[in-house]
Structures are given as C-alpha cells and as structure tokens.
Image 1 (cartoon, rainbow, N blue to C red):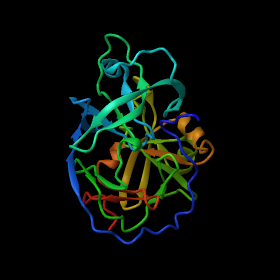
Image 2 (image 1 turned 60 degrees about the vertical axis):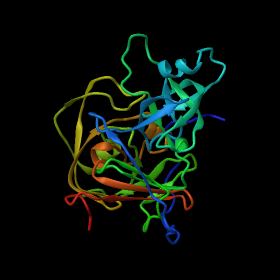
Image 3 (image 1 turned 90 degrees about the vertical axis):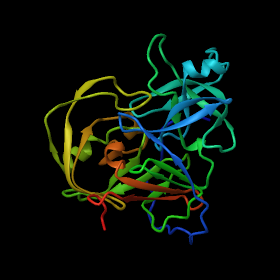
Image 4 (image 1 turned 180 degrees about the horizontal axis):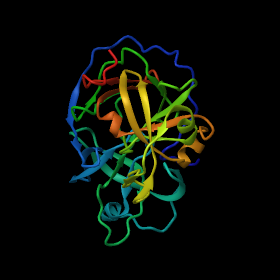
Length: 298
C-alpha cells in the first residue's frame, strides 16, 4: 500500500454532530515556537534527546531527518521504501522504525517513519515532523496561540470539518467574492497559507512579489519569488480575519487532493497562530476556533 505523508480525499458533507462531551482528563504539554512560526514538540528517542519535532497536522506519517535516524541504526539500502506525497511533489522515500519515541512522559512508541534525506554538512533545523500517527489520544487540542498540546480533552462542541481516512483535516472557507466552495486543508507544518490559482481567479487581488523562504518543512523550495493574494472577510470555523494575505502556489498537493480545478488553500501557521484546534477521532471531526480577540468570529 502506498504510504502518504500529506494526502487526502474530497470534503464530505459537514452534517455530523459531535457526541456529548465526556469528562475530560486534560494533560497540558508545553510547545515551543520556532522563528518560522512552527510549533515544536521536544521528544526523546530511546531515552536520548530531547529532539525538536514540528507538530504537523498536514502529515499523516511522522518523518525523521536521516542524520538522526542513522544514530539509531538506519542505513540507506532501499529495502524499505514507498511513495510519499508532500506539498510540492511526490517522491520515493525510505522508512525506518524509529525506536521508543516519547514526549511528556507518555508511553514510548516505535514509529515507522519517513526518512528525510539530509546532505552531509547541511544543518538540520529540526529533527523531524510529528504526524497524526504520533499522537495516540482519541481527542486532543492544539492551542496554537498559547503554545500548548492538551491530550484527552472533551469532545468539541461544534464541527468545523472532517478527518479524512489517513488523518488529514479537511474543511471549507468563506470569504468575500467567493461564490462557491473553497476547499481547505489545515496544515501546521506549513509556515504560510497557500492559495491555488482557481482561488486567485475567483477571490482576490494579486499583490507585489514577495521574497520567501521554505514553503514546507520537508520538501519546500529553498527561496523564490512568489505573488501573494489578499482576501477579505476570511472565515474558517470560528476563525475570522478581516484581511488575509496568503501566498499563491500551484502545489502538487492540490492535484493529489483533486482540487487542481477548484478554489482551494492550505491553511498554515500565519493564520493558525491565532487559533485553538480540537481533534476528535471518535467522531471523525474537528473544531477550529479563533481565540485572539481580533479574530474570534463571535
């Protein structure tokens, strides 16, 4: 079966209701904020560390830098490999059983992780990405604004979107001059939000070119000039932004999701930093709320 790092299916009807909230057993885990805006979770591997991993809601599989994996016995012999879908491309990657990964005193787990090639002498900004497979709680909350991961939380009170079969978070956005469906993937692994060309044509005005750095933690372009898109009255769930500037990009992930001809965007950390995200695997739903006073829809 093909392994997928970032992939998904089209959004189903958002008619599901969350189950009544059970008594919560909260466990707060402090996160660190990288200069890029990503949320970092320190982990140990086989008792060593801590290593900084990006908490990535856009990754169905966790990933580890090859230089880190090699410390625990990984050898690149291409005996365990498969196709991986990332934001900008699909590529073949090797896999490695990362031993005894642990964070915040939770039971250690071994993860069959994607190995990210790192050139010799190239600095490693983070040790890897923590995807949906790394968190075993059936319900948990990521408080991006207050830099916390809260495990075993109560069920969300309303539904923003659906969790697809491999763990990606899919929903829809509303915005001025958008008269149809705008597909959204919630991706804390992307520092910036990215709109596809159908959304550009439908919804907004192009701005001046912007110099930017890496689009994505694994496969993003190092640096390039891109146009940006300004949209008005932007809303996803309980997050409302009067004016929102995002990057333009015809990423391969839009094609993989079946959105290449439909307005769509990747919602990254430039917007998520104002939010709280609650994921409920039991109901297959999630809730996104704006918790900064300027961006709370209520």
